[in-house]
Every structure is written in C-alpha cells, then in structure tokens.
Image (cartoon, rainbow, N blue to C red; front, side, top):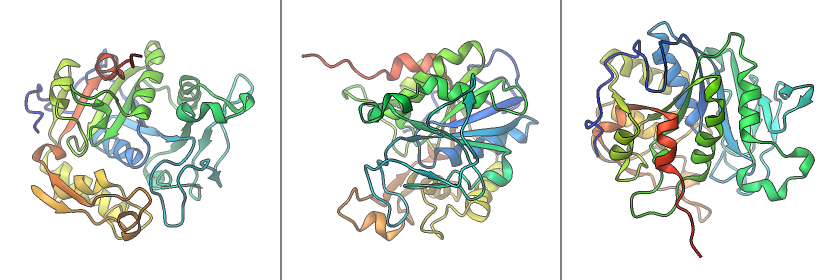
Length: 322
C-alpha cells in the first residue's frame, strides 16, 4: 500500500485540505477512540512547528467499553469517568457524556486522555452513544453533534479549524467488496458535518495502512486528499514524544495502542513483519485477543489530510437490502 498517488503537502504551514484560508487556532478530535487522542496530540505538536496552535483536544469514546483496556477492565460495560473536571454546559443545561479531563482522570477501559495534558491546555472526553442509545434513559441521551459543538465552544480562543484524527486508516471503511464501515469513525465524521458553518473541517490519518482497506489510496485521492511526509527532525520529535514523554512504547502495560506501536516501528526505520510490544494480557486471552504481528509499510510514517465533507460520501455505510 502506498499513498504516493496523492499530491504532496510540502509544509504544514500551507492551507490544509478543507481550509478556506490559513488558520492559526486548531482543535483536534480523536475520532475512533483508543489511541486516536495521542495521534491528535502528535499532529498538534507538528502544527506548532509552523506557529499554529492546537490547545484543545477531544477524545471520542464509546458509551460502553468495546476493546481491551487496562488489566482487569471488562468489555461491554458502561464507561464510567472518574476524577474528571466537570461536565460541559450548553444553554444552562449539562450536555450528557461530556467531561473535562484532569491530571487524575481515569475511565473504564484504556484511558489515555490525561497523557497529553502537559502539552495541551484543554482536553475533553465525549462519550458517543451511537450503538448504546436504546440502553440509555431519555434524560441522559445526547446528540454527538451537540456534544462536539458544546465542547468546542469551551475553547479559550475561537477555533478556526477542527482536525478529526484517525490512526491506522480504518476511517476509510470497508474495501470495494465490503458492506460495512467502522461505525464510530463514520459517526464522528458525520456528526461534525453540520458544524461546517462554524469551522473548517479536516480529516487526518496518522500511520495509514495499519488497518486501512485496500482501496484507501483511491478513496483518499477521490476525497481530494494530500500526503505529508514528516521531515527527519519531525520524525525524531514524534518518536521522542511517544517513547520518552508519553511512554506509549510498551514499557507501561496500561499505555498501549497497536497503531501507535506500529508508527514507532516505522519512525525507527522498520519495514516488514514485526511483533509489537503489546501487554501480554491483551494477546494471551480468550476475550477479544489482539494479534501482535503487523506488516510495517513505508507509508505508515505518512500523514493523510482530506476535506471531511469530501470524504463523508465515500465512507457512508452500504445500505442493507431486505
């Protein structure tokens, strides 16, 4: 897999696909849960090298846990959030499923949201109710667009561009013969659509190819995407962040992500099959076991940028027929 079919973005100082003009104030949304919040932070660090600021991050997590988390956590239970800094208010009412992340905030499952706090002034968690709506009382239900809108308006300085970040490439959905698309990734992209009148909307894919469909390069091209290849000094900075600052290198069994480990391997120059340093308890288990083996492709150090509104029609889930 390669994304060299896309036009090259030579500098992050340039206008990004989906922007009408050069912006200065950004927000990053981790669109698919898990380590996407870490990838959003990485993009924020790269933007700062071009005098662009990303001080607000949002992590989107499912209402119930759906993948392996820290040791002892369970699948399929409500994601409780502990020691948070309060919920977000809109029009005098609490917006359900919105939480300000503090230094000691934790949650059910794999909680990574507090890790980037030293580098971003505002981090929030939004719980996507999509697949759990029927289980939630009407009083506690919330619309994802309303949740994102309420959180983005908490920014200390007005946001101009929102970058919705995916790690690995499953935001591209199923390949041409498939019938499904990753539900949460699509819901997040779609939920941001109505906010186009307030913000420039950009979708970014970090470490593309880890779990992207085979036709991802074509979809990226059809969406008007561009490829950015970080410079050597930027690669060193990203690797230092992941290893030294964020400890997402396998040294801490509570801080892990398959896609971020694959990204680190590529940043070190690895190409070909490798076994990622995942915690033993997520590999050696009968409950949703993870495969540690990944084929590292050259494109996994690339970053893809696309206009969100152009990508949406290409990843819409196929309609089921009776």
